View 1: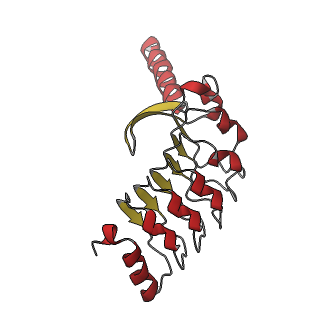
View 2 (view 1 turned 45 degrees about the vertical axis):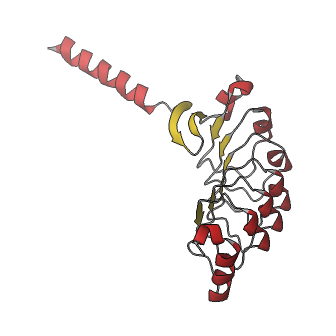
Length: 195
């Protein structure tokens, strides 16, 4: 009986230890750009940086976006949400393969005009960042299919959003748009609002 009890305790200890270890990567089959192997650890991703297509750094309390992300030259999918970032560093705008950028739930306040350099973007997530407007250069993102601006006190959107003709999904709940601004946005995006 003691041997069985000891065996059960050892087995439970192994199972608990196995499940308590943090995953370092996982295949996400249904992302905005299809199947992508997502790394949850930058350290793990840097072991073979040219191979990495997806990275998520979530809920880590980071105040700055790590510069080493720039070493992931084939990165297409980058999720950096729910940290404490106050700015997007220039190197991110130079990463020309990123198609999905999710940087919601941070403390950005302002999106720099350089975001317009990321013309390959198909999904841009900026929710819950205290944004009241977007730069005019957002109109350069002509491949954008999804734009998430939820939980921002937006007052206006730039005229250039009319260039986002591939836009399929636009979220802006909790925006502070006036009725006049909503009508203006509808006129700028007739393909989206069906005008």
